[in-house]
Structures are given as structure tokens and as C-alpha cells.
View 1 (cartoon, rainbow, N blue to C red):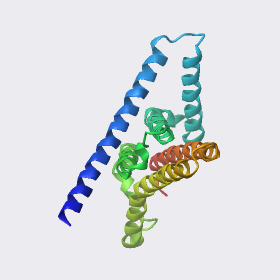
View 2: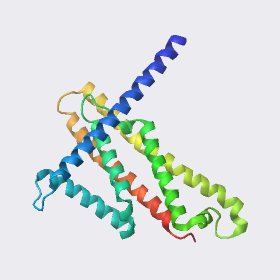
View 3: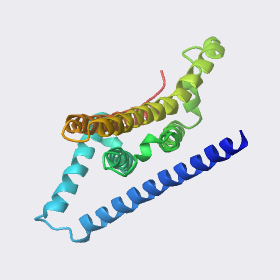
Length: 221
């Protein structure tokens, strides 16, 4: 029993090290691409700059349509989350690589950042009055409403992390099984579907992030 536990613990440490390595690889790659895209900014953009501008403009439009013009102050957070999550999701489609978002530690870390930012924004906008949204519409409902509201808010990072983790982990497992059983042309439709799902999961995470922050900025009724 002890050798098995030692092997399992050692394997988990090695697995987490691999995930962290892929995470740093993606961060370095995105930093490099950002540097190359902004190194020689031109009025007549080249192909690479043109692609990056389309991505940035698309995220900016998505952000303003969801949160309004005041949401632009959160563009760095939302854009960073979106680009990182999409890159991480797609990395698992490359043979020999693994999606960092297929690890619960990564998705929980992202969800905790969103959870913390939501309440930081709420407190900065409303001050101590931000607590009123947890107390219900009338004072005598506070003992009932406060536990419900607290559980509701705590379920947000759980939902964000588990949804992203479950979908990407499932995709990686399906792709591995399909490649093992039928390694030729059959996996191509599966890969196309996985690319679509990876994009959808990225949009869902970004959309929920914007909705949570926008909700914290609104006045409690």
C-alpha cells in the first residue's frame, strides 16, 4: 500500500509540474506575440498586426455590448482571461501537449481571480452599502436572505472552475481515445468540434465574468 501511495503522490507532483510548465509556456508565447505585434505599429498594418487588431477589437466590442462603455476599464482583465483560456484550451489539440485548463488547479485559480475582482469592484463602487445586496429587500428577511446570497456568490467560482475544467478535460480524453482507436482521418471532425467547444467555453467564461462584475456595479434593490 505504501509504495502505491508513494507512486501516486509522485505522479501527481510530476503532473502538476507539467501543467505549470505548459502555463508558463503559454504566458511566454503570448508575451512574445504581444511584443511582436506592438513592436512596429503602423497605420498600414501587416498581417500579424492586422490579426491582433481584429482580436482586440472583437473583445472590445463584446465587452462594451455586455457592460456598456464603463466596462472598458476592465478590458485588460477580460481580454487576458479570454486569450489565455482560449490558448490553453487549444493547446491540448496538439499531440504531446496538455491543456492547462484541463487541470482543476488552473480553472480554480482563474475563478478565484474573477470572484475577488467582483467584490473588490462592488466595494469600491458602493462602499459599505455593497453589503445591502446580501441582506434582502427588508430587514426582517436578513436572516433568511443572507445565507442564500452568500451561498449564491460562493457557487460562482465553483461553477466557473468546474464547467471549464469538465469540458476541456472531457475533450482531451475523447481526443486521446479517438486517436488511439482510429488514428487516421476519422478524428478530424472531432477536432473541429473540439475547436468550436473550446471557443464556446472561452466566451462563456468571459461573459459570466463581465456579468458578475456588472452586477456588482449596479445599485442593490
